[in-house]
Length: 92
Image (cartoon, rainbow, N blue to C red):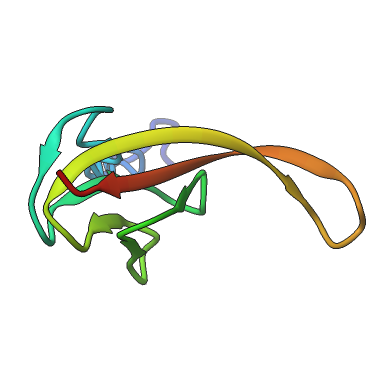
């Protein structure tokens, strides 16, 4: 029986590709219809006025305008509150 391990394939050489998530347009930047504002997993940012949420939680603009970020309090069904970040697109 051999005392050295056979030289074969290694199991730890795979690495997943980066998904390029994050904020793509900053507060006050101009934006056109359909442009992506934020790519996210889950709802860290909530869509506001003139913003829609895609099936993968991506937020994108519905009108031409400027991006505006704001925060607010949201009351959950159990009565507890949390701060949320809302993204709006204001028409110019």
